Length: 114
Image 1 (spheres, rainbow, N blue to C red):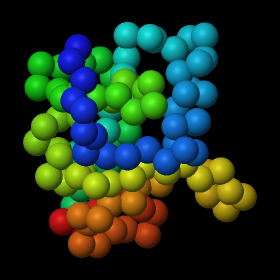
Image 2 (image 1 turned 45 degrees about the vertical axis):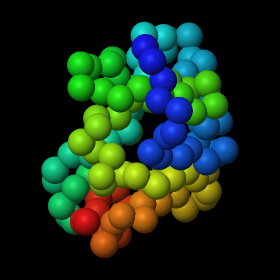
Image 3 (image 1 turned 135 degrees about the vertical axis):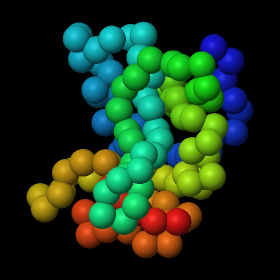
Image 4 (image 1 turned 90 degrees about the vertical axis):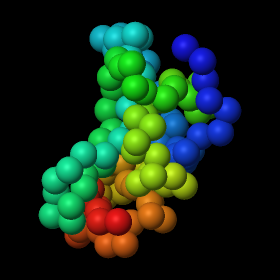
């Protein structure tokens, strides 16, 4: 796979550490990459996609700190400039999406409108 040099999304240090922790699990399928994307739905119109997946024909591939990342080219318009963070606090634990393209977000932060 050929990596794209500029990445449309960024991962915070906390997110990088958590993704690498997940990838270090002995049961992890090393043939998968981190998929970042969107899909229709959610209370604000679109929902973030973040998970491990195999490369598909229309995927762009890039690498962040040694993490292989996949994203559909069509999703770049919604996600360009977004940062994925990971929160490990007492009140909330999980990935957090900081998207400058979102005109509104829902209360849980997993869906947005553009």
